[in-house]
Image (tube, rainbow, N blue to C red; front, side, top):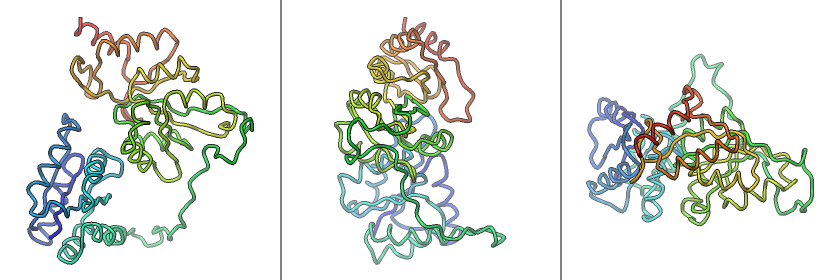
Length: 325
């Protein structure tokens, strides 16, 4: 029997399962994992593995998660790379789970996932009917940057790449970026700038697949984005740049990338760092880096999502400086 794991931010997965119990009764071989405020990605990964360990068939597992490119999806994606019998489906809803109950004795995890797409979509209706959209033809992804067919030296647009957002975020491209920030800034291309990630094929694949519809995502080393800055073939590109650390952002800026403002989204806690708010932890190297960025005239926009009120980066840096001594 295929084992099910429902995973979500907050209590959504718990609520979906509670509703399913009311309608369909209890289900065997089903585990729920909730990613709560204050938990780390390591906590989430550990909870997912513990849930798998409670299933009878540990090689035939279907993860039903809430949000594509969110933390539950990203952690499950990494785990699936090691287990060919595991599968993931996003957009967790009650019709999806109901269909899964009926399929589980007759199919593999991957076959069930394929079947659930239709059930999840058919469970969405609009009243009055006149507001129900007609089936739209898939839109081709926007052409956001040159391909090999465009000769070097070609000038597109005004010949200068446009940066609609430059963000520091330890998690790089995840749900908040793929939805809220992309909707607000309307990039044609998301570029993750990281020497470390550029050499990690698993993380590269995960990031490229997490791009929202109509937007292409690339992972490049810092040297490449410095080259792109001077490449006239990118003149029609509106780019969102994502940096894993402030050090990567500084390296790009010192290399000539014309960033004027950095959105500081999240910086994970680790040894030697202190938490200055719910999502930012700074160490001595980070303090020195932000000092250097400020001296270069860089402005800071400290917000996790667009609807947050901006925080004072100077105050956060001074808080870390005082705590670290």
